[in-house]
Image (cartoon, rainbow, N blue to C red; front, side):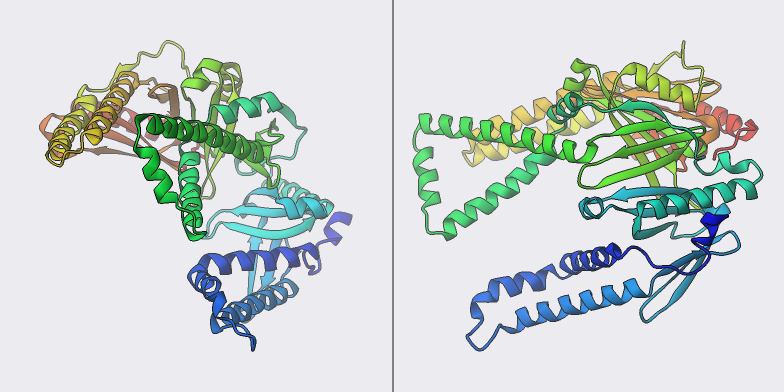
Amino acid sequence: MERRNNFDSPRKQSPIALLLIVYNRFKQFISRLWPIILIAIVSGGNSTASGPDKYTLTFIAIALISAISGIIAYFRYFFWIEDDQLIIKKGIFNKSETQIPFDRIQTIDFEQNLIQQAFGVVGLKIETAGSQKSELKMQALEIDVANGLREFILSNKSQSMEGALTDSVLVEEKEEEIYAISFPSLIKIGLTENHLRSVFAILFGLYWIYETVKDAGLDADGYRDSMEGTIIGNIILIAILVFFFIVISVGFSVVRVFLTYFELKLLRRNNGFKLVSGLFNKKEIAAVDKKIQLISWKQNALQKLLKFHTLQMNQASSVQLSTKKAIIVPGLDSNDISKIKNYLFPDRAEDGIEYLSVDRYYFLRPITYTILLSVIGCIAFYYFGQYTQIFILLLAGLFYSINRYKKYKKASYGINEKAIFMKGGVFGDSQWFIMHHKIQSLEINQTPFQRRKSLADLIIHTASGSKVVPYISLAKANYLYDYISYKVESSKLEWM
């Protein structure tokens, strides 16, 4: 009971929380008032010897107010434990006191950003059930205090629920390492990532550089026009741009993967998983088996060649499902995925399932529109003499057609008495499955075109998101609807 005495009277967070609260308020201030800040920066030249302009003064004033309010918020934030409840008291003008019974607490996760790591503290995130706002955060606690608080809450929750703890919250047991990412795996994942988001970031950066060069007085437009004047110049320019985009986008992806998944570990406990990862922002996420609603895994073409997948486990975050959480684990091979599936759903009876293809209109419908729009676009470009654009449009249409055809060929579904399964992908592969007892509701959806062709989409809703079996016959959709509804209603297993 010595540990309880540490929490039976009101106490503040670590003093480092003061720094984090002020920092977060500055971030909120910048995100909400960036137009005013931009005007202040642009109009900085209007400042005179007598003092800064009104926009700069406004910025300074609001920044000071944010800092002062953050300091007051820190000194008015208290937490303690009383009668098997975690009590939070906070507020500057509108004071509030939140009482959270232990049996409402779903998970207790830790996270560490760069500042928290530097000062040896952790952020605490508590997921609760039965409220619209199901997440509670503490900015900074000493590591031993955070561990003590979590251990005390979980151990007392276990006693109060008389063994029912395994249904709702992760049991603190000896951890078994299921998977740990290596440095070569980090590089492989970064090199094989989808680099599209990196390309958009680079395009934005190029535009900024271009405008900066123009503002500096350099003749960027003249250099571009001179390059466009010769075929060799165009080839050189395209080659430079392609090389630049490849190198920078790949490098950007590798860095992002490294920061996100550094020292990633997937740990197994008695009734769930724990994921730890991150360099500058280290996160620890717990996932209880019974809260995991569906599993999916995928790989792009390069990842397929290197034989590894990215696994995603979707879990419900509260009884009222106000938020959703997913645990993402990259770099897994087929044996790792099978091991995780066997932990969660050993009775899924996956072997021997017959997979059925979706209807051919899943391919023909969008391709018809693609051809029609391409013809219209080519006619318009030809009329205005834009012959290069015709080639680009035809190339884009061809790529989309190949993409859609491969997506159609790989889309297939299967079902047995335990679960429904779906396969897909384009140049890579993707799969997911949902156990029948995890399904919350089913929906049959038809577009006007699908009604004319007696086709439908079967939409499967779970507590952590929805999945679609697209473009199947209406008769098959009705059969699946009735069969799965029967399995859900007759199952004695709990969804969470």
